[in-house]
Image 1 (cartoon, helix red, strand yellow):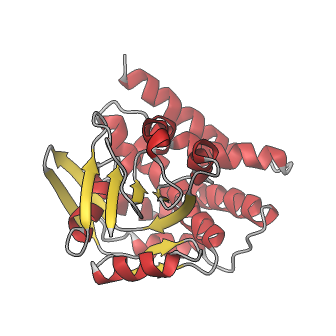
Image 2 (cartoon, rainbow, N blue to C red; image 1 turned 45 degrees about the vertical axis):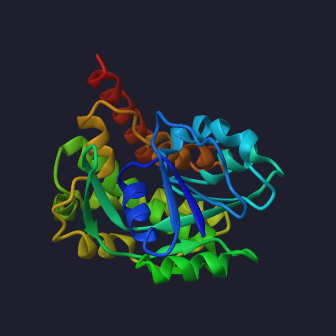
Length: 270
């Protein structure tokens, strides 16, 4: 399979390395442009969500009807950006992963943890998932990508901003003194998700505390702030708060975190 990875940062580079075992892979970095998209090409969109529009527009006129864009990103309905730009030119799918990687320096990415890759259901998804699985990316076709999206989002809304504000490793999120605040964040997310058609029977707080108690990783949001880069807060907590307004659900915790992170981000750029 011909695979073009648009946005070759940490996750893009990790997936590119693994997929290159069985595929013809091209990594397209931020300052580069694809000069051709071949027949039956799969475009793996791994940019930060706020860079999606610019990235997809750069290859818009090169997209073919048999092209597939797979949006492997964080955020609430982040794939809609690519869908809006691509229109009916090609198939756009969402994917969710919890593989962990960190960008160290040009040409060097640290592989942090093994996970899965859930791919939105479509006539083409089984082939993609099988390919990913054979390359060590634990690919499978999701029975409900919306559920998978919301599930990851709930964890991200608690983990990312709190670790970024407190400047702690991911395991620091498991401090029981943070439980009341984490519960507020989670409860707001779960209420909005339910109004959006997704109901959970999960103890998110317990899972969060169990999953990250040994993690020495630095969250992606904290990494962005350290580097003076724009964060994805608007597509995480900010997006939950905005969707909450639509459903008449007030989300003060998520709205406050979005404001705090945005303020910190603006100060780091001064």
